[in-house]
Length: 268
Image (cartoon, rainbow, N blue to C red; front, side, top):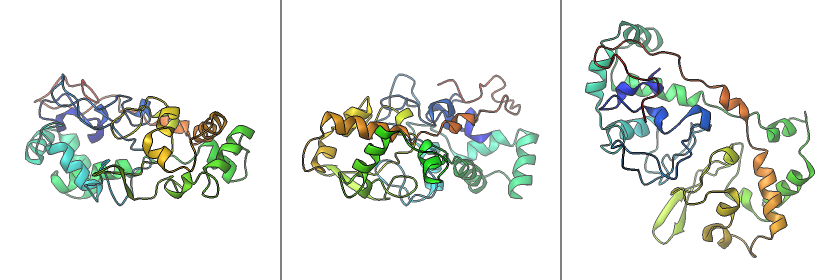
């Protein structure tokens, strides 16, 4: 409920789901996300929240080390929600349902710690591990030939993509200098085919474009050949888990006198 609750924002029109929509694999498919002021934009592309829990660094620049820090920065940022925990608490306490849910789930009243705990628990539930790649890893299926060829290219022994995009969620938990003085953490590649545009600034519209950015080309001994590019993209497409679309917003939100006509997920 809190993830789709616009009462968390100062104007009652934005929620976590404004930038992380379930129908877009918990991204927004914008180059950079919309800001609190409707006509303005943020400076970063919205990363997927699928498999986001358990990282060492959060945000593209890695400035947060816990999900609680992420939530606090987003809620209090004048560019994102422009709100405060005191204001949100006053609003949510108007609802007998919210008071009951916090008591039942957390055995504690509504406040900064419990709001963070509830939202963190929801993000931790957003797991996506049933892609064709996973099915093949379990021995219950096989990847198409083109994707298999791409998987071999992806390995450390060939192109070395797996050096940074490693492990079950295809990220290494590290930050890398993509331009002089600009460091960005490795993003997950899970569901990458359905989370365009790409890059922390959203400047790559397609997988082919992000594979051929100067940073990625610098990691290779030779520029990608067209055939290699096609094989890599075929493999990356096998990391798509469409069960992520089964996550749905609630049909309604509890009544709040301060925002009686608010929309689930916000207006923008």
